[in-house]
Every structure is written in C-alpha cells, then in structure tokens.
Image (tube, rainbow over all chains, first blue to last red; front, top):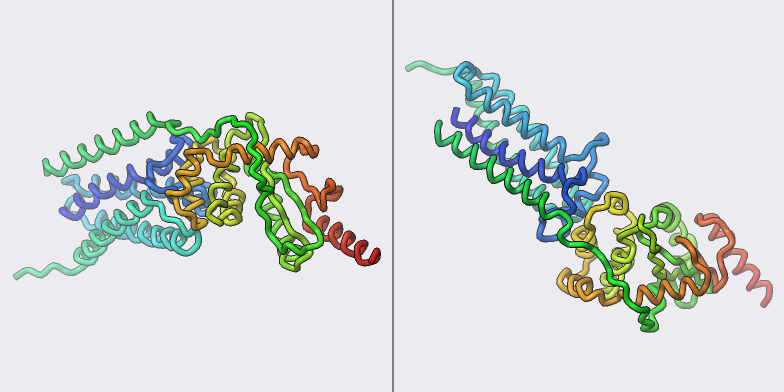
Length: 145
Length: 222
C-alpha cells in the first residue's frame, strides 16, 4: 500500500511537469521558465514530436495512467490485489525506458538540456525504483511461520 | 492515510497555481528590435570560403523566411561541399530581414546571429536558426530559444545577453537592409554572384553550373 501512495505523489508531480511542457508545445505558453534556453532548444527539435504528437503528451498520459492505477489500487476493494502493483511496474518500466531514450537524445544528439525534462526523468526514475521492487516482492510466495 | 491525501491536494494546488501563473505571464518579454538608423560600421557580412576564391556569392537572407531555411538546409550543404570547400566560391551572408507582419522575429533573429557572430559563432548559430525553423511558425517568444541556440553554438550566454539587450548590431542590420534595397533586393533569398544578380535557380546544381561556367569563361579569356 505504501508504495502506491509514494508513486501517486510522484506521478501527480510528474503530471504537472509534463502538462506544463505540453501546454508550451501547443502554444498556450509563449516561453518556458527554464533558466537557460535549453528547454526551448529541446522542445523545438524534431525529437519533441513522436508519431505526430508532442512527446510531452505521452508524459501526460503516462503519469495520468500511473496516478489512476495508484488511486484505484488504494481503494479498499483493490488494496489486497496484486494486479495494480504489476500494472504500476509495467507502466513505470515503459516510462523509464522511454525517458532514458529521450535523455540520451538530449545528451548525444540535440546537445542541449531541458531542466523540466530532467525533472521528469528524475521523477519517473524514482517511480521505477519504487514500483519494480514492489512488484518483485508481490510475486514471492508468502510463507506462514 | 489522511496525510497522504493532504499531500496530494498540496501538490495539486501548487501545480495548478504554477500552471495558471505561467499562463498569466505569457508575452512578458517581447523579442522586438527597435527601429534604429543604419549604422555603417564597414561590416559586409560573414563569409565562408577562401579569400582567394574566384567567385563570390552574396546571399541576402531573412532567417524567418521558409524558403531561406529550405535553401540553407537542403541546397547549401551540397554547395558547401562542391563549391566552397573546393575553393571555387566564397559565400557571404547579408541581413535582409523582411519588414512584413508575417515575419515578426526577422530582425531579432538577425540580431541573435550577429550577437553569436561577435563571439565567432555566426555559422553554427545560423545553422541552428535554419535547422530548427519551427520557431518561425509558432508565434511564440523566441528569446529563450535563440539564447539556447547561442549557447549550443558555443557562445558565452552572458556576453550574448548583453549584446541582445543593448541591440548592439541593430544599426548594422539596418545598414545591410538599406544596402540590399539599393542593389535591388526585394525578397529573400536573393543572390549576387561576383556583384551581379544571380540569374539561375536557387539549387546546388544551378549554382554549380553557373560557377563552373564563370570559372571556365575566366580560364579561356586568359
């Protein structure tokens, strides 16, 4: 239960970060509060779009899905069930892998760092570090002593 | 459990407030360049290629112009390979930021290129302005983006900021524009080859054929 609470908190924070980047990308905000121009450089690169949609949109959807699974998993009816923990581990692994790819692009292809993207990368990494061990623990058979 | 929900609400409130305030501050810093009188400092544009090249091409450019961006990204790399690095052509870039409402950031882009150029980073800056041309279509404030381009090009951001804030080269850009008008530029990109309006197509093949014919003509006249 505890891990679902931690992931819910992190996912909600990540959702706002991704939402901010998405709203910038679709033109709601004129500029990004970044401290350097790196965020705009990354956002203006061709890698900021995947399958015709802004990368940040996938972030919004991913964090929203993580948050929704957490909240469902915290409901007393599902608290004892294992599937929310498994679902969180799967979503977190997908998110972590995608983020690792994007961070690699920033480092080796675009040669610019977006602080908000790095913030999101840190959040999804933390989520992954919490979700994966929880899923592995839940698969171990419980022994009565 | 109660603490958990309090934490969620706190994050939602802070996040929502941030998104709201970020939206309110939209357009706070305009990337405008003042209208200043031409200041002819003797600068005739950045060049690429050998000083001894027999042919000089002058390109009047507007960084916000999509055709200029297309030319820079599609044709120019081949021109560079076939004509500039082989020593046949020296390429010179002059500013001609079009004064049309559809290009609100033209002069700012020219200023950004000059400010990067001051630090020896003109060409990588020009490449960034053309390679990431989305900025010309979004209508967003481009100041942060261009600063990032300058940093990416290797320019010192503090010096770049100082140059931008004082609009150090606005007069130089105005002078280039005025010179362009005087020689008959009325759109971008416009090319002059050895001082004459380029009559061919703005393609690498077109330039190669024209330059080769000029060099061949020069050789036979000797």
